[in-house]
Image (cartoon, rainbow, N blue to C red; front, side, top):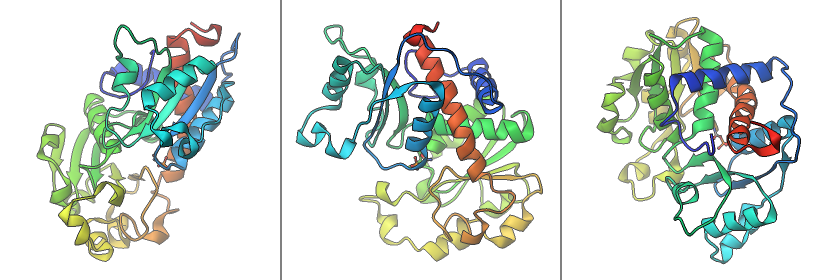
Length: 310
Ligand code: CP
């Protein structure tokens, strides 16, 4: 792959190959031997704990050389465009940029530029607005595969602030492609019926004892500017109607996985004292993320014939 920006065109074979490769790395498999250095920048224009550190760890484990980039103090604050910033990275000898930005599809002009533009930089999308979050989606698939061994027929609920969630968008697409049955729940004002083609919108209590995976989403207050529902938001009421409290936790199947991309709003999506409960897979998701990001970065390194790899 020359870039890794979306799960949109990722076929089932490619998804399974990435999961196998990530499992190989997790089981201690040797990294490929780079014959020449490969330089990477992690350019995060939105805050991140998991994705940023996980990519940095994956790069280190893969033998890539990270060139530090401080988004807050970059010359983009003086008006330099993202495209020009990427040209700078290119001129300095950077081969790949892992980018997170608040604008949906920010990567389009970087990967489909005009014939008279000469940017030559591999782009890995670490999250674009409410668009896509391919590395989160693939680490989620790895975690589900590790627990259940396959996807066909699994009943998976995606619950919460769905309209604003790039994780939800990537996961509803990829899970449908992999043969899972997708259900949605949460406030109807944060659900878009355009998602009906992927699954059914139901009350949470109809799903609790039925699903194999309960995928919770963070309420993303930072994306609610101009949303009338934001000013009416009440954390306790949200938790009562749409959150996993102790009663709902106990009604979930014994083998059910509760997933959340993080960060978790305690006592909103989930009772705060359930964060480390046995059915919760959050830290397994994070651990798997390092190995999945190694597999994704390797696919782009090979796709661009960097480091002497084919
Ligand atoms: N899941 C996720 O994207 O978390 P961060 O915002 O901490 O990277």
